Image (tube, rainbow over all chains, first blue to last red; front, side, top):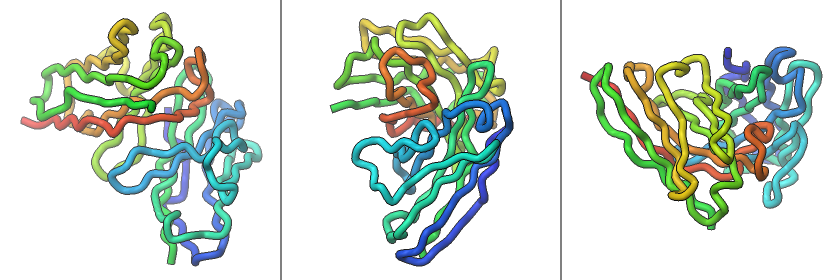
Length: 110
Length: 124
């Protein structure tokens, strides 16, 4: 159960768009449409942003969007805002009935 | 409102045991699978275990299999995690998280509510 691969850090200026990748294998990301994305501010619980690769829970801004191609899922944040500065994690269901998270990506809003 | 409140953490010596609890309120506990997720200080999220809504199915991460036991008491709206043979690498904040869909054990990893976590520190 190796962690999914995410870039350690990304950055962008307010108003710009950024994309965070999440790479796995055919046993997890590539094999199922069960990728979720979470936002975590320091000292806070993770917040669900995206589930089932592309779906957004009610109340989550449409500036957050998800996609997947092959074994790589992506989270795109458009119109960057200062409050988006946080850690972001992807997760995927894994064959054999387990779950795996990505290593996390620290987003800095310049 | 939905609440998940963990307790039971603390400083424990290597090799000892600990039982964590997650008290749920604001929803029909017996309808939802609950997961444990941990986060070592300054590190990322790590999935630990899940128990189905009725307790019949349990799954564990390889890193904890054989040492951790997840259980629940639906009459008390409480989830448990029994941790045995504690190791330094078990030091983390342990959080419970609710699957966002009724009756699904994994629900695609869609966790709609999380607790704030309880810190377990393994140190001699």
